[in-house]
Length: 243
Length: 243
Image 1: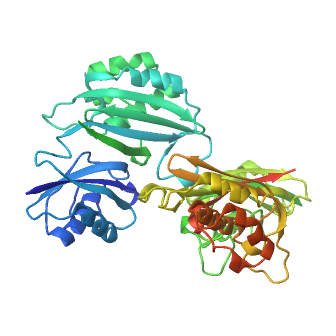
Image 2 (image 1 turned 90 degrees about the vertical axis):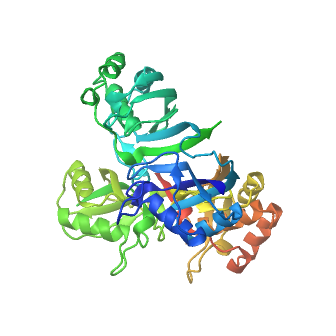
Image 3 (image 1 turned 180 degrees about the vertical axis):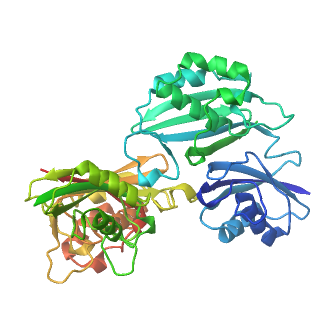
């Protein structure tokens, strides 16, 4: 058996998310269908399942084959079969204990906000348009309170019985012209965690919630205490790190 | 009669260019159809006609009405009628001698090149993917030779009897991570001029044409001497200046 690591990038706009679903166009569905034409049917493991509309600048997938095949052949044939919305960046043979999901040390996401009065048609699929002037220093104060290991139940869509304890390693907001961008890294994220954090930070940036109120929202461990979720299209899986 | 200036932005991806054509989805066609629903049928004048696939961060259009209407109403109603690919940024009443086209002092275009081995699905509609490492200093040398007033016949799609003399006011290439970007300003441009200049600069950046050979290409005034045209989707009308 040979195990492979596949690095890819995709525009999530036209997909019903990463994870395979019957009769839906998904990234995993397209990828596994293309792989099946090259090496036969197989199962793949992904580092970060992304929701519908969410993009990936750098996603990692792993799979194993009984009969080895040259990684460069996989890259070339996959890119020939896949449409332009998915690009395979590279493929390499890895140790058989490697799992794109379980071997990952951390994931980094980026969230982009267009912060000006008028929308911009050129970034409408990759950013959230917030027409109110945002106080980025206050947003940084809000997100700084989340760094470290916490129970993020207030920021997670419920998954019965699953732990919502996560460790945020780094999080920073910056203004880049009319764009306001978050980069956030955690060992892993629960469902809708980044988008829920963004929604709360925007409330802080508009002055409707004080940054000093964030620890209490974390503390109550109740999703009703947060401020919903920011739209998916502003979110991009930026990178996955392995030890 | 009242004359209006309309500022707009569009994602050119789904349009057969700016200029109206029968049975084609064009920016002018959509804009005039929406305006007709607000103020009745009318003709508009545009600062820079863009080809199919070319975008506009900032385009300017002018038109006149017999019965005045509040500019803010035009903005709000147009944005309600137009789809998300076109955004009206503003509207103002201007002097009756104003023409978006003839009053313009200069136009600035941007051209984006993704300069790395792998394509990036997230910028596939807004940049040209050039996988060969480009020498940006050499490209700057090439474009610097074009600044000033020249006959750009070597860089223009023929228009019988029309002058191809244009004045380039500024042009600069810069590397921004994996992107290589041109900003070029001229009093006006002839058809496909920016894309023809980009195609030549890329040949220079790949080392296939020396930057020192550019003045001779300009001098022969023959389109066959140039290197074709770069693809339209990397091009964006960046701004239009008025005195």
